[in-house]
Length: 255
Image 1: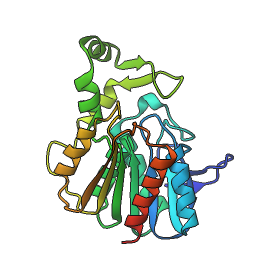
Image 2: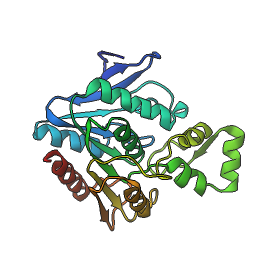
Image 3: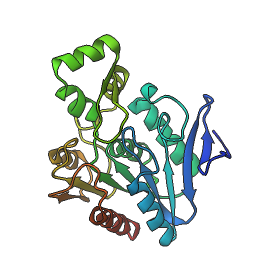
Image 4: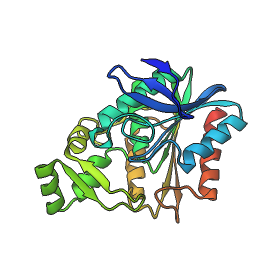
């Protein structure tokens, strides 16, 4: 892959298939911090921006980017799958970072971060999951869909539903569900042994807090901690939540 400039404020990482990933990168010392966003989210969200400012204030390198089909990156969201977005994360990680990194993954980004940590064990120094949602396509989507929703997906290969987080419909494709089954992590021990911190709201309507307990149990490393926030929602974007997040990242950066 090669890097080129982008007219907007974001920079651009060109991909071999003619597409591109939009990103923002701040220079700084190691370990760096990489933010991985959630499903249908983008790199301009509250948590990503707060972490960028925090890393810059402390002199650490920072990277945020959009998966293809998200934000300012190329491609259609409907064409995305866990495998494709995992490949995007690997490309960004390999081409745009150096040395040890702390991965911070929000919701789906937590799944992508886990896959990345598994694939790059020598360069990942720690991982923070914010309502981390490994296996969500199978356990939190497909398993929860009713017969009508499953029938629509199997017939039309796409399901559109109202979203609590956007004016645009919440889109799920059958390709996403089927491809997700190739990347499931919670069915076996997960060979990740770096420090892991899981931040989880107990009033999260999308990722039940018990999901974090299952994830912690599956991780092979012992340095795993869960912080349950009783009144926390899925976003965990209040001022208090952001303070918890930055304190958690600081703890891993200091190791």
